[in-house]
Image (cartoon, rainbow, N blue to C red; front, top):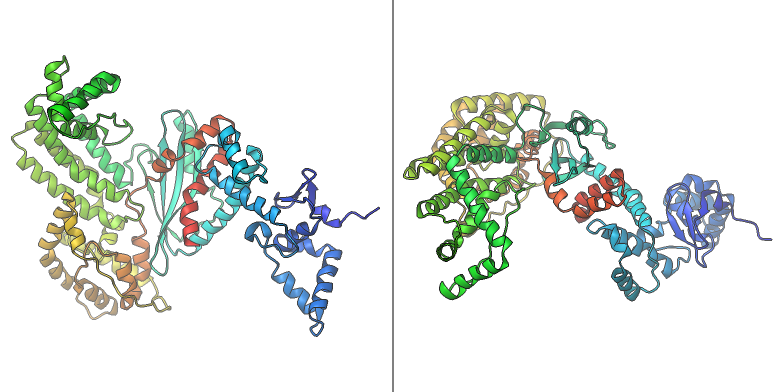
Length: 615
């Protein structure tokens, strides 16, 4: 009777052809392979346990003596134990006769598991999917859902978690963002994301935690928000955390959100709700949209009018998602494009009519809203920092003041623009006294002091002098990098209204910026450094500010505070996009996927592409 290998003390037979590691729960195919792959796994993943296998140690020593008799075997043994062979499941290169079948199955298993980041686990039961896999790879055995769920929530999650920790360690200062998004039912997503700037001035943004939630009471949701940071499995040193940005739903009760996107959306929402005439007009537009959406005959006839009578390419009326913050304005803008066709249709049928002065109001309303939509699009970018908040708020304020004056002929739109301006002044009044916004704007070489009053300049001066006296100069020299300027033709193609206003304000404010450079006049080394920075001409808005800092090593003493203040994001809206892309995960929750595993899958999904692109 053959003696059973003592490697089995660390494995158990899941089936006749599959062995599972008791230490890490990894499955191995043993079809015609004996225990060689199991020993190899212990050497790679669990070297301490491998040392307890006396027969394996003898095996390695014997092999090393045979390969190089001139060298002492102990030295070779230490080398092999310190630098174990790679795990075949990780690299696909076994060193002990791993079969091609095993490697193929291991790779396919993980690729199949990763597919469920974008697909429901229900796919695995589909006859069409099973037929496709059997056609592409007849030797591959499709496993139960739980098998791939386990690969994702244990193996892949562990690797992603480890890489996130490495990314956090690369950052000297981090800004956290908390975001909460609710779907149509009692389900939502609570997320905690992290942003920061590395030593070589690369902007990093990634998710630290996701929580799939289906709580029915606000109390439980509030409790989850409070527990989000303390219960992190990744340690975040307190001295690294610079600020926490919260969106509208996760903000403390009775307080405004820190997220600039949600503050501006609140301004628009309140301005619209306070304008009764505009609300009635939007209600009328919705009745028209619902009429064509509910009747295919009416919809087809509207297309006929456009194509045959007006000789235009037909444009369809589509219902705009009500969850969008600007759904009302998108709906009215779409109808405006079809104004003539809708008017002709309304004359032939008993459809509610929009009168000429109302069409004018719709047109003017779209013009008032254009800068708001452009700004929210800019702030929604994950790479946009808080340095853009003061300049864009100033540009929007200028645009609304102009609209109030220019659209005085329309009482409805003039009133709407005035109310929007009032909301903007109230909800963004904090940015001119908040250190993180003032400092971020000043440390952005595109803006500096262009939007500051004398009081704000003094606040920044005091704060930056205090910050620089605390920070020791970085001992490591910063590599010089040639600054690449974007061709000015790129900006000519951009017809953005807010860009035009911002460029005008920066040009007109250039003299004030130069006068402000004398405010730091002093013989001290720090003040001389600031004087030099203030004297530098502002760079174009199309140039990356981080690359400018990286290419100017003479300001290395300022680098730590630059990385801290420019790490602050303009918005905290990560949950919204991830939630909308992950409906399949919530479908799987209804089918039995646990909230814990759903949260792990969401975390992998949010970080997977970003992390793999860096590796």
